[in-house]
Every structure is written in C-alpha cells, then in structure tokens.
Length: 332
Ligand code: ASN
Ligand code: ZN
Ligand code: CA
Image 1: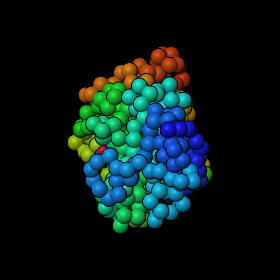
Image 2: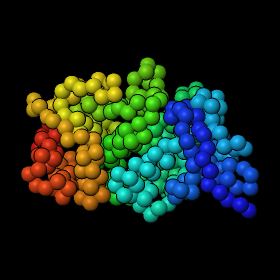
Image 3: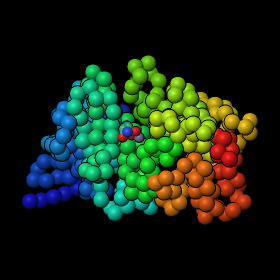
Image 4: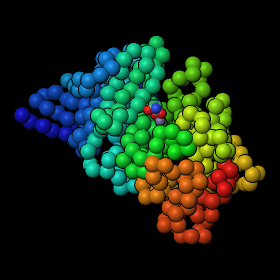
C-alpha cells in the first residue's frame, strides 16, 4: 500500500482554520502526523475506555468550526498536539513528551457531559471530554498544552501530585500550556495569561485560572504561606503561576494583545519582567535538571536560581529577576 504525507485543512472549534499534516493511505486520509512522532487523534464516540477509532477523511478537509461536527474537536486536539510538539522541539530541543521522538495520541468525545481533559502516562495519551451538555469541548489549545505538559513533568522532575510539589506540577502545566498558546499565536485564540478562556467552563465567560493574579478565580493563592500545600493542587499552583507572570512581565498594570492585567507583589516591590522566552527557559531547565518529586516552593526558588545561573550567570539581570519574583510571591 502507498503511504504519503499530505497537508490537510482543518476548522476546529477553538483553533479556527489551520493546516494539518495528515497521512494518505490507499486513497483515504488519516488524522495522523508522521512528521511529529506519528501522533494521531481518535474518536471515543462517548465511550470511556479503549483507544477509539482513528479519524479518517476522504477529502482531507477536517471539521467545520462548529461543535455539532464531531471532527471539529478532533482538529483542535490534533492541532494542539502539533503545536505542543513544535513548542517543545523548537524552544527546548525536546523531541516529544518523553524526549524520545515518539508522539502521543489524543482521544476526543470521551464519555458524556464530561467537563475535564486529562493526560495518562500509562497509555501515553491525551483525552478530552465534551463539557457541559456535551457541547463545550475541553479542546482549547492551552488545555492541550497543559495536559501534555503533565507528561513532560512525569518524565522529568516527576513532581508528586500533592502538597507544594503538586502545586508546582500544576503550575508547570499552566506555564507551558500558556507558552504553547503564545507560540501558536492563533488569530482565533488570542495568546493570554488566562487558562481555558474560550471554553466558558463556568458558564459566565470567565476563564478557569488567571496567572497575573491567581486569586481572581476565587480559590487560588497569590502568595506562599505555610498552609498553601494543603490546598487543592489547582489552587496552590497560583504561587508559581504568579511567580512566572511576574518574572516574564513584571508587576503592576499591563495590556498584552488587548488583555489587561494587574499583578501585585506581596512585599510591595515593583518588578520588571525578563520576557516570556527567558522565563520559560529558566522554568524548563529548573524542571528538567534541578527539581525532583518532592521539590517544594523553597526548592523551586533554589532550582530556578540554579537554572538562571547556568543560563545567564550569577548576578545577571535574569538571575536577580528570578530572586525578586520569588520574593514578590513570599518565597524567600
Ligand atoms: N484537567 C485536570 C488537570 O490536568 C485533570 C487531572 O489530571 N487532574 O489538572
Ligand atoms: Zn493539570
Ligand atoms: Ca489562554
């Protein structure tokens, strides 16, 4: 049989119009990308187990941009996997989630009315529910990047998913999910420091989380305190999300791509950011070289300072900015 790489067109629920690398096999196109580790997307068709059915298409035009067309969520998932692959490869030289060149597969239409998405290391796969009333799929790009970054964390630092290390695990996913969104820079998904802003998961148009001031979600911590590790990991993550925002963008009021932020500090300091790209390099090196399964917030300060020292030198502007940003979230 003849197997050939092709370029298809996709219209996703959230990504809008994108190109997809597909696979032409015996006259039919598969939603499978052999240029990125063979990653592909399957349809679970409301089941909650199994590998699902690989998406195929006769004309290589996928989805219609509406939820009612089942391929649209698959376009989001397949594009999200491609963007996450490209982000890690081109930003950090990491070939896939395990760094071994193998792509993960994605499953869409998990169960019914399932308001979540998750990474599973045991299947090396990504899964997306269709959300409330089965009409609000969880397939937004920052969620895709968030979930697949759980795989990267599991294959690097291995941060335990509880206590302060759990907060760091969750924050790593929000940080890199957001960086994937900035990397892709899609017109229909304006890059921002909000998590899941297009899904309308709360039904009132608000995002799931805010990195400039995490407490805006009503539960997340803006600053470290001795009890932060007893919060749910999606709330204790606030301290590190806030650190990353301050490190990249600085404190105070700022508008980025038309979105307004106002980021406070615990100690009243005024901070200047070092930019997203450098902040991401610091976090990735800390995660992949210095953090371990039990790293807590104090350990994350040390790990990121070590990373900044390696990358930019002790006493560099970047090194000092890392120290100041942690102090700004009360990790001293
Ligand atoms: N969406 C959730 C998360 O990534 C699901 C999970 O794995 N806990 O935090
Ligand atoms: Zn998570
Ligand atoms: Ca976002």
